Amino acid sequence: MKLSFIGGGNMAQAMVGGLLAKKSFRADQIFVADPDAKARAKVSRLLKRGGQVSASVRDLRGLGSLVILAVKPQAMEAACREGLADRLRGEAVLSIAAGIRLDSISRWLKGHARLIRCMPNTPALIGAGITGAFARPAVSRAQRNLAQRVLQSVGKVVWLDDEALLDAVTAVSGSGPAYFFWLIEQLEAAGVALGLEPGVARELAIQTALGAAKLAARGKDSPASLRERVTSKGGTTEAALEVFAREALGERFRKAVAAARTRGTELGDILGKDA
Image (cartoon, rainbow, N blue to C red; front, side, top):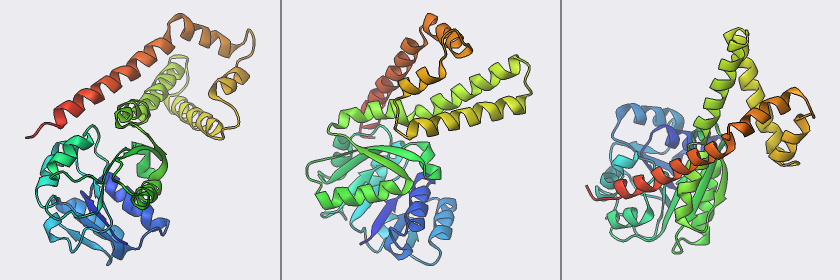
């Protein structure tokens, strides 16, 4: 069983590295095509002497059972039309490009139906990602399982029954790391304003975010229960949360995430147009 990556950038490199580290695939089972020499060099170092790395999909010896479209959204149409569409037979195609709908990809691939679309996030680069995925009905169970195996190389996977929900996934987990980075920034800045040294404030903020996430990830208690456990009546945490409530931060945050979802839908319309 073989895989081919069309695009060898950061996310493809993370997946290749994860697959090799977990021994899910051997290097000689992985093909990668990317026109960028620097990207090819990085992938070649991961694969060592195995697999095949080329500048064009036309030069690949084969496509394998799963083709992973790992190019930038604005390059997706060209990647599909130039060399890939005519080579596909019954392979499954997995797109990790943000925003581009399967209708558009199918059109660029001359009606190919065995399509999967997913939305990973940047923590995938360190094997700590979460990916939302949707498979069209033509995708077999074996192909879906293969796609899951690949995506699990960089983190966890959740499957959706409606492709439209990927815009919500993009807004929650795709853009989500930026929200947490922003919160760490604000907590650090607040600590500095209260007299802490910047380095101390940053370490406190980062470690607090990391520890809170680990507690939540245990799954024994809901985030709401964990919050309530920290919030003593008349205490310091309650004083801060009361300000959040007065400022309607929860409502504002939900509006922000909804705005991200709306923009994702708009980008799907824009990126799906033929060049």
